[in-house]
Image 1 (cartoon, rainbow, N blue to C red):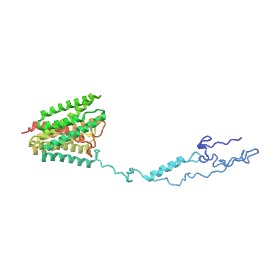
Image 2 (image 1 turned 90 degrees about the horizontal axis):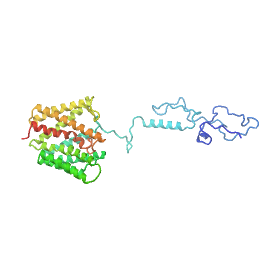
Image 3 (image 1 turned 60 degrees about the horizontal axis):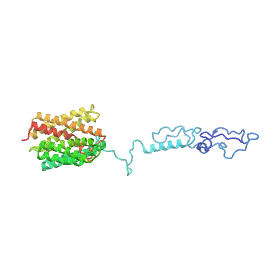
Image 4 (image 1 turned 180 degrees about the vertical axis):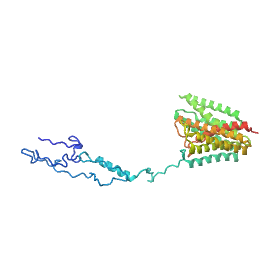
Length: 392
């Protein structure tokens, strides 16, 4: 019994040996006759439907040299050769891909649910949504100013609310590290510290700090859970960093000219941030602390110092009747404190592994992302103004 040669592309019984997939082994050559039909005495009769009985038609996907490439700017079609291509799968995939590229076009954005391209978010060079950031920042400043102008005790409520929100954000952020600082005694201690600072002064504020730490210690000890030292360290960090430093704003507003003192401190921080942003965007080339905040530069820091010093000299002269020299010093100190506070929170967030403390404020992240500079600047302003312009 004579055997028929297996066509190229696979072994007997495999899909590659299917006549519908494989090209004829003698395509383009005269069909052999010796030993087959009419090929000599004793030759077996030709099989009906043998793959070389008739020459198959040329494949429909054979390249036409004059045909243009598929799609605008598409790459030249690969040389699909009939004797070497076992199937037309590769050809079909190539045509489908090039047609899809031609249909979509280069650089188109993914469509939204309504079928329209999703517009890019409006972000500045600092990586924030600037319209939302400006609107939220303006609203916060107006809330602080109105609370001091309309009714000064309302400023105490603003500080207490900010302390409570800041404590909540810090507790929530530190949970990423596995720490579980007690929220209830921390918020209660924050309210206690702001109240003591308003009614009793700086000595009572220190007592409030100690009372808050003791309350967190007792609360955490009563839970009988592992990680006691870790949680207590996190609670101490939150207590000092948020309500204790923020309560100096209450001490700053207590004198008769307290509204002007708070205004000078806040505007010095705003001038520092604005001058640093502008100088960093246009002139920033030398990173200040690339491992902590890659976007801060020494040129931006120089802009912060200059803007805060010059602006504060004018503010203190017209609002508090303080000489220009002391105003320059005040602005420079506030600028340094604000930059250090910003870097401290950036280092904390980088160590935790988060970008923002929360998403409470559009364009800003969390409230702590706005208080980072103020937390260090307010105690510096209180101490410095107590020296150069004592109350009363």
